[in-house]
Image (cartoon, rainbow, N blue to C red; front, side, top):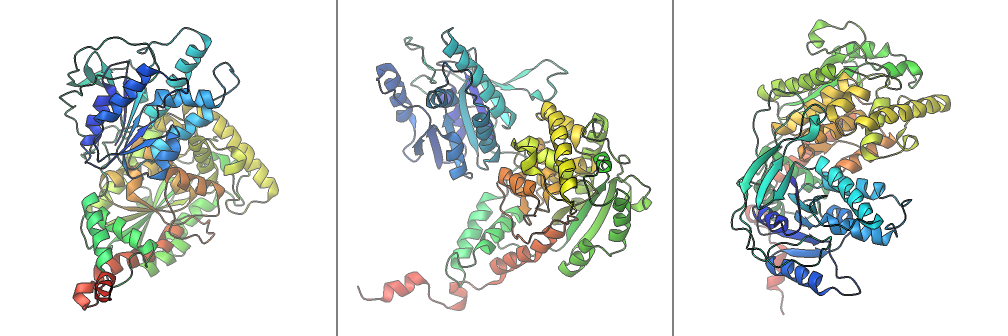
Amino acid sequence: MRTLVLGGIRSGKSALAEDLVRESGPAVRYVATASLPPTGDPDFAARIDAHRSRRPSAWSVVEDDEVAAVLRDDPDSVTLVDDLGNWVSSHLDRLGAWENPDVDLTDHIADLAAAVAAHRGDLVLVSPEVGLSLVASVPSGRRFQDDLGRVNTAVAAVCDRVLLVVAGRVLELDDPGLVEHRAPVAREVTPAPVAAPVPAAAPVEADAVPTTAPTAAPTRPLTPSTGAHSGAPDEFDVVASPDADVAESARARQRSLTKPEGSLGRLEELSIWAASCQGVCPPAPFADPVVVVFAGDHGVARAGVSAYPPEVTAQMVANIAAGGAAVSVLAQRMGARVIVEDIAVDADTDPTLAGHKVCRGSGDLRVEDALTADQARTALAAGRAIADDLIDSGVDLLIAGDLGIGNTTPAAVLVGTLTGTEPVVVVGRGTGIDDHGWIRKTAAIRDGMRRARKVSRSPVDLLAAVAGADIAAMAGFLAQAALRRTPVILDGVVVTAAALVAEDLAPGATRWWLAGHRSAEPAHAIALRQLDLEPVVEFGMRLGEGSGALTALPILQAAVATLASMATFDDAGVSTRDEVDATEPV
């Protein structure tokens, strides 16, 4: 759960944030961004000391304003960052930007938001709300307000909830996803008693709080909860993490197995992940893995961005159904089933494969929307329904695959837009285009990203603008699988592009996904880095269909088998290293 706590001077927002992270247990990392100015400031120093005195001794404290780097150092820890106002001030200082309007914090803000979005542990961030703190009406003050507003907006966009502390009361701000269609609404969470007023002090940009913490905390827990999704296909409940207690039991079992600790390398990590997803240690082998290949055509394919004509999509749908494709052969060898879903193929396919068909093809993302908003929502709902049907039937592991001529172009547009990467960096060779095709594809990605940037904050609008129904369905599928606590192996760049959107739709979904491989497409590595996923294999594959994910499946099964079936030191009567050390003379 990622939470942004906003408020004015002496609102008690820091004390509220401290109460929130206490709910996650005693192991808390406190990131303090404030530092005493070189010229000295007795009042500010007293406020810093007050903050320090409230922190439990068990908390680890990091005094550093490089928040993005600190978050990436330990993305699984329970973390409190206090506060983002100091982050703005320190960056304006460092860059000499107070009086220089040409210095832009956009890249720094985007990097901060990306680090927040990638954080897997519970995270609470404190920030002054623009307008609720006293800031001098001078150019530097206006600069601070402008940049703080941008920071708050960017961070709020990747948080699961935003709390506002006003006049001793805590309000949860409503989801801004449809702000253009309705006025913002605030929902009261819980009144938070605040300490008695303290004498006013010189205004500063750092947060200041009463020296006595509130005696009541919001009743809504920081730990995510789960539940059935609402009627809207783009609305998801909070995604619960895989079972942390089981993960710890799996780590303890790994230490007890007849081998040096860590000697199985990544297999040990995979086994712990599998156990935590299954909620039991030792885990069971995955008994019914299923590959779902989402097929669709894309209007941009007519622009010469692929080495193959669009007609190949429908032909390959029939080939997969007949068992002749790479995914079919690999699945048979790996003990998995394959289902191909015609979501948006621009042809008539076997009716048994088109039960969730949304449309035939999509618009040319260079010059028009790929889908209408209704089609995007229908595709999301289709992906969710496919996931539900399979999970309800007993499937215990899902693999997402893609099929569609030209589909790496919208995938690259999504990756470039959501990671802030230039078109020339995300473009790849796809099906094997030549240099002229590469130039055409780069131009198409550039034009698509120009249109996508305007709607990048709204997952549905972004999918409608540049994705296509097959990618939208994949996003719904991946998010719903996580909501249903079912692990997924991701395939290549197209699936991972959909995963970026799915994580925006259902924050926390990433923890239920395993990156099967890293493909040869440049955008894939960028997307995996954004999701903080490390691939299992890297064989230079770029086929799609789920082929790379299937290649990783036996490795995952092997990891599960070692954790479940290896003997422990006690079972085998083998001495541990500690026992051997204890018998040696001192």
